[in-house]
Image (cartoon, rainbow, N blue to C red; front, side, top):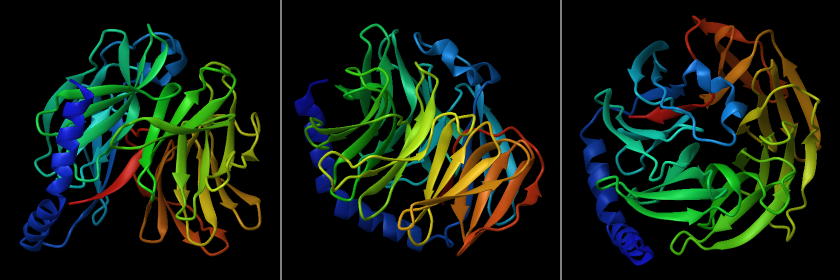
Amino acid sequence: MSLSRRQFLIGAGSLGTLAAAGAFAAWRGSRPAPRAYLVQGVGHPELSNQTDYKMRVAPHLPGKILIVDMQTLQPWEQNIPVSVHKFTQSPAQPEILFGASKWSDGAVIYDLEKRELVRVLRAPAKTENFFGHGIFSEDGSAFYASGHNFEKKQGLILIYSTRDWTLLDSVDSGGLFPHEITRLPNGQIMIANSVDPENLKSASLTFFDEREFKMQRRILLPFAQHFCVRPDGLVTAGSWNPLTLRNGVYTVDLKSENGDVKEVLSSGQYEGEPLNFLNLSGDRTLISVAQSGFLGVHDFAKQTLQPYRFPGHVKSVSQYQGALYVTSSRGFLQIPILEDGLGKAVQIGHDVDWGPHSDIMYL
């Protein structure tokens, strides 16, 4: 589809935001208080060795969706035809989730309320794949999914209409293997590109105007796939480079012209992939490294990193009501968030299959 049609649809959706918000409020007002669920995708074991697919689209492999009711802490899982890396909740229709694979060409639309699969999507070209993350437009009328074209060696943002899930546009992400995407307080879309095309040993953060989707800024840093953004414009970002297999974590100041990039965790200090970043109270950010037993609390003001270790491998981390909920090789753990760090981990659930990202969603 042409860019002009995409702009028209998103613009038309924006005009209906107030009406949609009013309808949503009325719908919500007739329902019980929202209930919290931890939601995550569980991938096929064959996709765990992701470096096998760094130069090609991975095969179609099934996976699961795992849902934990945060009041009862009871897990519920369902088989789905796609190995989903992360689920994202619609702001306009909170029962609707978009789940994208990483390395393969599949994605799903899932109804959290009905607990049923709505649709399976495939990447638009045989040489393209989804790359795990995405966000809805503010009014929920469009979805922006990270992707990659292996033949063209080009990172992509795949833009879908949520009305009928047709592809509206495909935009160059400004890097290779784009992964996590967010919307900044100023309305810009920020994308973490695993590899920068001009310097294959670096990664980049690229910034786009949402209406035109033209790149406005690029900040280079050694590693970037995942991140979290503080309200004051400080970013914690990091990951591993799929070409060099080195890892690291850095802070980026978006108010600075060049980003003022500073190292927090150096390559080789901890094995695994820096995978989850969460803003904690005060000037603190939580850093987790997958495939290791490492969690760290980074204090921006003091420029210190307080390590927290426990036996087993960290998988996903969520924050809910003053505690961390950690999925790990030792089961489902709850860790209190304290003013001076983290409390003692308590096992609250039995071992089940866990995925790389979990999110607290309300319905």
